[in-house]
Image (cartoon, rainbow, N blue to C red):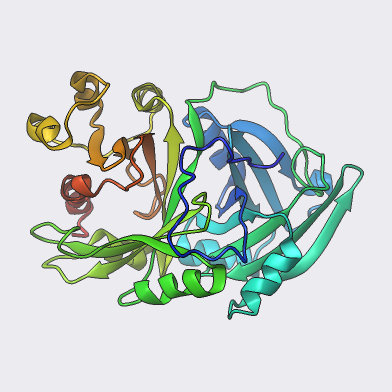
Length: 379
């Protein structure tokens, strides 16, 4: 089943993006984790993901186990090693649990590989075809920032549950979904003075264009700051903001991430919903923790963003942030880190026309993150 993003509201074409690498959507995100079985239970219980496919000893996989979960157009693979040593163990030792692969759904994985490698990408996986009785999938891959990779997935000739090597995974335990629809964007944290390098990588190697940039005047508080640029592919379905640290009086969230992750990596996954009040209410009831937003944020927010469809009181109770651009407004909220290390987290976002990323909320967001850093003793 392909991750069809044709129904998304974010079909705005990025300025000057080249289309030598047409991307149909995000196919899946794979995390290397210490215990995939227990991580899968967390994403089922707390986040409402549904069991989809499994690979492990029962399917002939000897070195690893993978659980695939899905909610609407979002697919997660949770992978753990079955043997000591090896790349997965080394990755987990260095980074803790974290995103290894951001897989992109393409019509031609071989051409995608050739186009990107010819423009300077480092090869991760040469094109290979895997087959079973349900058809074939072509995979290829390239390296990006840190140890993160992009896998190109061509599945037009496959009709099975996920891909060859996996079997259908069914369970009697199937908590209801919480209303998550698709991945809106995924944010990468890179080291000092590396943002432009990786933005140029996405522009040159993958044909992305810069949608917007934020400097330390936009994203800063009394203590910390960061710089960010948002890169988008031609049809606007794939958006990758890239963050780097900026000079501040204390250690920023980007520095904290890089210290604990031991390098660049995926900082957060923004997942879209059509009803953020309902989604966040369900997530909180299931134990997902969110950043605290002070009540005084709501004293003046409507003066800044204007009229909205929602009542302010439930937004205030849940701590949901509001921002507006020329095309509408958005509602957003950020979880605390979902892993033991203060690294990866999720953003819940509902767009009511807005195409931006919540610039008006940056100060409130940063102050909320700094409160958490202070409690951790890492500010």
